Amino acid sequence: MANPVVAIVGRPNVGKSTIFNRVAGERISIVEDTPGVTRDRIYTHCEWLGKKFNMIDTGGIDIGDEPFITQITEQAEIAIDEADVIIFVVSAREGVTDADEKVAKILYKTDKPVFLAVNKVDNPEMRNEIYDFYSLGFGDPMPISGVHGIGIGDLLDKVINAFPENAGQDEDQSIKFSFIGRPNVGKSSLVNAMLGENRVIVSNIEGTTRDAIDTKFQTEDGTEYTMIDTAGIRKKGKVYENTEKYSVLRAMQAIDRSDVVCVVLNAEEGIREQDKHVAGYAHEAGRGVIIVVNKWDTLKKNSHSMADFEKAIRQEFQYLSYAPIVFVSAKTHQRLNTLPALIKKVNINHERRISSSVLNEVILDAIAQNPTPTDNGKRLRIYYATQVSVKPPTFVVFVNDPDLMHFSYERFLENQIRASFDFTGTPIHLIIRRRK
Image 1 (cartoon, rainbow, N blue to C red):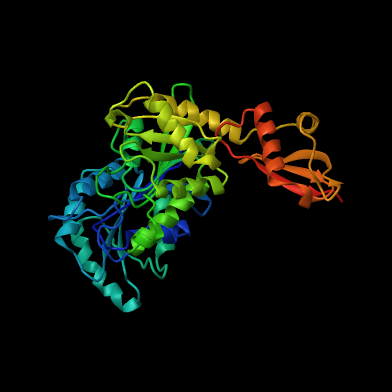
Image 2 (image 1 turned 180 degrees about the vertical axis):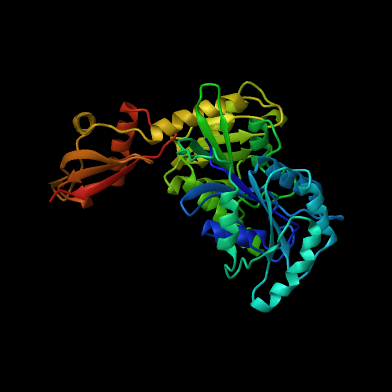
């Protein structure tokens, strides 16, 4: 059985993300005093008293003319549908508001356990402020402080005791991948098109998706995937708000958590300088990489269009020569069905292991084809090589003097390894070390 799911819901600015981070033990959600900052559901894995569960932090539900209010309400309702237990968060400082009552009406529709947490009770004197919340109709309000951690343990005790009896803990063996790219290249649209449902808010406003969202799905062959949609990465000079700074940091964290990263380009706009920086993050992290050209349906094309675009990509992204390129359309679903299989192939290559005996045969053949270089009469000697890790595949090459290994010969060795084994989509690292 899958882990039980806990959803944190409530109007904006009651401290849901602070509570979420306190339970998760790390800063996963954006915490900002601006109402409505958390626009999409955020998922994380948690554990309390030996019981594992997944937690969802939802966007606030509000009334009035707030931007994205319809979508934010949708997101919260979806999270409520997915949850086994719900934490309804209100604020002791403002008391019961009309927005709290609207959230309560939504929660009345569910038959799942709901625990009312009165947040921002930062000192004992404030406990007298919680009694008005009995009017919301969810039993005894529980005073807590997300900032100071007061009452969180008591709340979690009640939450885990309300889990379904058959809730279990499965080992996550899914292939994790993410879409990264500068704002407005269509990452969220790709997520929705692949899933066939509105899991992520889609908008033409840059920076709509401010948080990374984990979504699981399974293909017909039984392969499980976890898809992480990330915030758009802006140039450092254009990062004005704290929320944007957190978004860039979160995109980096999403890359670190991914097995495979899909670098999304906008076919309409062509290749921009920022695209190279974005792709560089994934390359430097050693992740498997696929270049996804989105909005391909919008271009007027001839028989050379795809070849010309691919040539431009290879020219501008020379460090990603190993990355396959796929031209897709989130709008028409063109070639989207090929992505899961390609991601699976890249992941297999990303964790590929080569035996030392076979590897050294390739190295010896390479030396015979192109003898090692010399410097001031001293020749580079390669004694042997061995693979030391995967994700990415990493090889240590033992030599007489690492200074004699010219970068061009190192590149030659890498190309020979790639020619002998399928490392499509993954970087490979060569570590040159002196034999002791």
